[in-house]
Length: 278
Ligand code: HPA
Image (cartoon, rainbow, N blue to C red; front, side):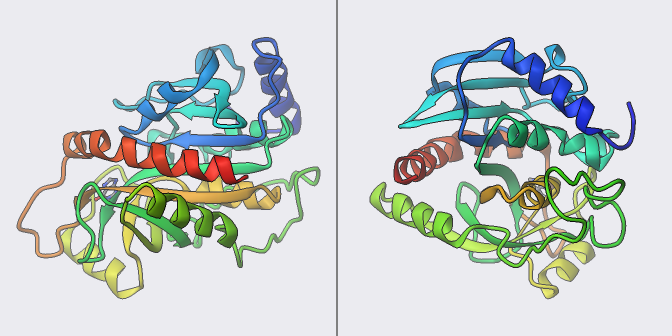
């Protein structure tokens, strides 16, 4: 696979997706580790396995189904990624974010992105939901930024603004939807690291000092590419574990997937409420 995905490759993928569906999605959804169950709520679902789409990066991680689901959720036509890829799997940042480009070329205007994350903020507990208000692109700010390489002018400018990466109106809509469903949510800062190793106690104390509330290995690259193309973004973190700043407990992928079972119903209610408001 090439490091930098071209417009032609993106359009070949769009062409392949269009062979499977006549539906015109307005909103994209990316479902993180253990959160794929949200796609079960989609009606009129047309399902496309990732391997049928040229140039599409294939998920290699347990807990990521690896299929695109296009259908209706509330009053919207949605394009749902049931599973995503990460930088740590060996893909380039351009490959990791290529599905967002496909969404943009298909006419998607809003992107709802979810992830499983570790809590750095001591007020957060496993099973909680955090609405992302901003991010720290620790992974991207010194090198692997997804916009590195030739700028694809059809999507946006060379030096895109990131001042309101997470749409304040969508955050407000999510807060309202959560309140109506009786779900307590936090608002906070998500930090993206490369992984795949979890952070050590000193890593975590550093992340806390620089202002992060939750830590994960995804989302930020996709959001940067979405904003480059002026797609509106809502980001939701499902808190799967407490980051262990004193080194007293271990973090495992199994607990991340387990927490997803508690978080999926909450995210489903919030996302449905947001879709209704669009
Ligand atoms: N660290 C990094 N990524 C994660 C974590 C974590 O503790 N939990 C879920 N994804």
